[in-house]
Amino acid sequence: MRVIELIEQTVGGMGYELVDVETSPRGRLLRVFIDKPEDEKGVTIDDCTAVSNQLTRLFAVEDVDYERLEVSSPGMDRVLKKAVDFERYAGQEVQIKLRLPVGNQRNFSGVIIGMRDDRVVIRSGGRTGDGTGAVEHEFPLATVDKARLVPKF
Image (cartoon, rainbow, N blue to C red; front, side, top):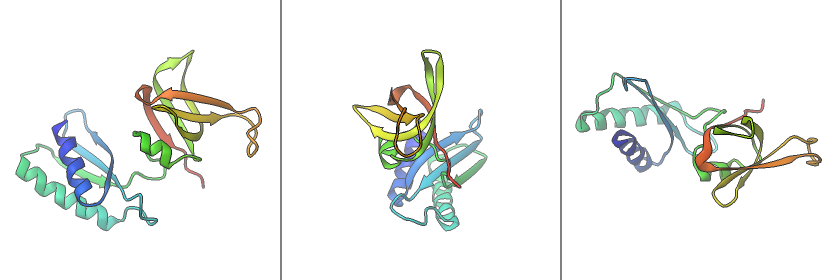
């Protein structure tokens, strides 16, 4: 946990948002996903290079043991983890996997409505446009195992 806090503090101090950190089973690979939500262009290769260089120096000073560091943008199918993510991407399509099933279902997809009392709200089904026949689902944020945007091409 200490490493993630170090990464979040450093990335935030550089003006980026930490989206996610992935590690390999033995912690030898650190994969860091960053974003610049206020910038329409998103994350550039120069941004990734700057963050990578800063984290490399930080890890040397803090004696963080790793073999490889990768810094990347979250991509079009970005992970949603925080309440602010679900608010920011309201109106976009999402796929959600829950930690435990609701009824007999763990996987849901639909359009993000937003957050309501610490619960993720999505609308699924129905006809496109008018919402006829659509069903609203609400899940406590803590029960969401994985959530990703569905890219539109």
